[in-house]
Image 1 (cartoon, helix red, strand yellow):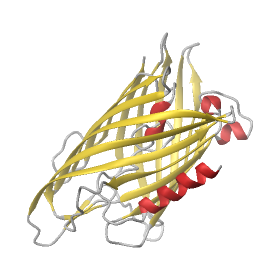
Image 2 (cartoon, rainbow, N blue to C red):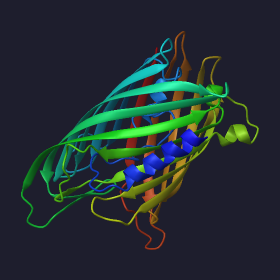
Image 3 (cartoon, helix red, strand yellow):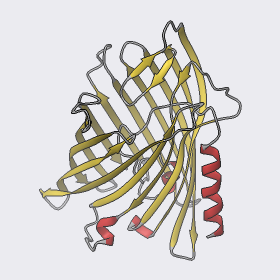
Image 4 (cartoon, one colour):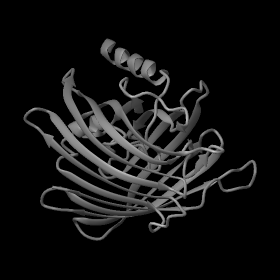
Length: 313
């Protein structure tokens, strides 16, 4: 328990250091099994050998948002360690784009013969091209009279997680976009940093024993370089079986819903096809990320299509 509090204190102290810059996150749910936002899960046998491709946004329209990302994971049960690679390209309107490459490592140990403790870190290198300004959720706000900017940034995602065997119950926390000391902050280019915590599985806590169902809660704190104010987001994320096609095939439905940046409602329904295979599984998912600002009866961003294909071996 003392070690857990030490890790939490360390994470908090890192988050409140200044000048953290890199990718924009929470386009998709920050979940236990997402190894980019939770690199500690690289040390999970469920991660195994995994390949994932995701596309968000329009069909490569230079005037709109789009993003492509791939993830590859490998877990070695003999050493209780996992390794992962990520690569992504994000285009935001006419003013900004960035490409990121990352590599992560995680280790798993067991506490009291009942609790899996995982620690993970992912180093990321980001190449930015555009103008000075600030990244918001799906938009980029340029600074007035800003000159073109080309910049390389190094940063890291750090996380730990604790779970019961099989991840029936879990808690994970971490930092996203921690700026490494060797890279100076750029006041002309502001990308947010995040601290998160996610807890579940509430379906299991409520007595629903279906293996493929999940209900979890995630809290995200967002902060821009040079600012002391924090923006808070709360999400509930659920996935459950909709239709069983055969012993190994089924359709699932999912929904992420919550309050983003203390300002507007965000909701992302999704439909996925799941197939169990001899070694691992295959999942194809399509979703639509949407928003609504109740106070002004407006939509902070237009609906964004999300496509995800995942295969484990």
